[in-house]
Length: 227
Image (cartoon, rainbow, N blue to C red):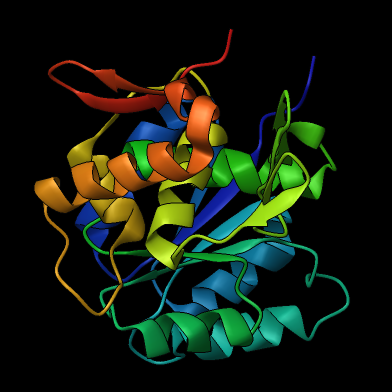
């Protein structure tokens, strides 16, 4: 039997920690919590987590500094880090990724999206080939963000690739428009339910005959249907 994934959630807001721990525990993760950067470093040393959810804005040791310390330490640099931030500008997102973070989520975030991101990072860490989706002559490399159709590369905007990556890396899971909005939040323009529908239309159009795999789920949103 596989050992449960150990998740360390770090945030100075107790309500967020409670919600995260409750939902991740239901998914059979082992969850540890820390309320500041110093406590985070101590919990990492004590428990060797498989993944860290790290808030950016915290009193004392800032989340960015915590990330830098962990990624510069040979003992811990392999641990994936998802930054949790209320900041949503593209610059802040890029800065977070540049310091070594593996992914980010902007608050408020969907628990369904958070769980999907954790699972995707753990698959990538273990070398699982599910980060590579191939259907006929359509190939989606979720790690390198490359899409090819019949041998030719397809270029998508950041938001459209994010939507496709979310759906394709979680086949047969239905995501609401609000889940999708939270996933791509951070662009420098407002995202609405209608904007999600427009993105889906464009994705289907450019994926041509393979666009049919992006299914509408009535009353919910969309999913990537795999037979």
